[in-house]
Image (cartoon, rainbow, N blue to C red):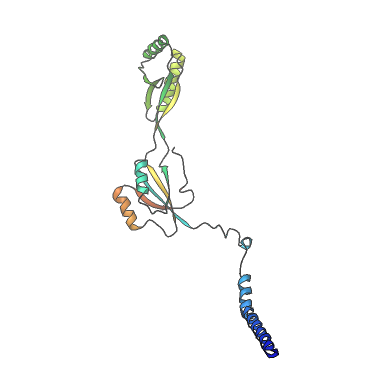
Amino acid sequence: MRWLLLILLLCNALLFLWYAQRERVPPAEEEIGRGEVTRLRLLQELPPGGAAAAPPIECYQLGPFATAGEAEEAAQRLPPEANVTLRRSGAEAAIGYQLVIGIPAEAAARRELLDRLALAGWIPQTRRGHFLLGPFLGGHARREAELEQRALTEGLGIDSELQPILQPATGVLLEIELPAGAEIDHSSRQLLLRGWPGIKIEKKPCSGLARPQPDQ
C-alpha cells in the first residue's frame, strides 16, 4: 500500500512539471514581442500634417456650354470620382441704358404724366408698374441717357432713374477636380467632343478651381 501511494505522488509531481514547462514562454519569443511593441508610434508623435495630408489632385476646365442643363449632362460623362462645379463663363455686361419712371396710382395723374412725356416725344413702355424710356444704345449711350434725364427733370419736372440694360452672362463652364492619375483620358475627351464639338477641355492650375460660385 505504501509503494502505491509513493507511485501516485511521483506521477502527480511529474504531471505538474510537465504543465509548468508548457506554460513558459521561450525567451526568444518574449524578445520578439517586446521588439514589436517598441515599433508602435503614438498619434501625437507623427510629423505635423502627416495624418491629414490631402491627396494630390488635377484640375480641368470644360466649356463653354450653352446652358446649365447641357453642362450637367456633360458632367455625367466624367469619371465618377470627379468633383464638379458649374460656373458662369462671364459677368453680365451693360449693353445700353434706360430711364425708369414710377407710374402714379391715380388715373388722372397717369394721363397727365403721359401727356408731358408725349410733349418730349416719348411714348413709354410699361413694365412692372413703371414707364421705361429708351433704350439708349451705342458708345455714348450713358451720356445720352443722362442728358435726357436732365432735360425731363428741368424742363418737365419728371423724375426718373437711370438703369443699365444688362446682357446676361453667356455660357456655363465646368470646373473639375480629379485625384492625381485619374485624368480625363482620350476616350472621355472624344465622348465629350462628340456631344459638344465647340467646347474646350483644358488642364488648369488647381488654385481657385472647383469651388462653388454664385451665378453672376
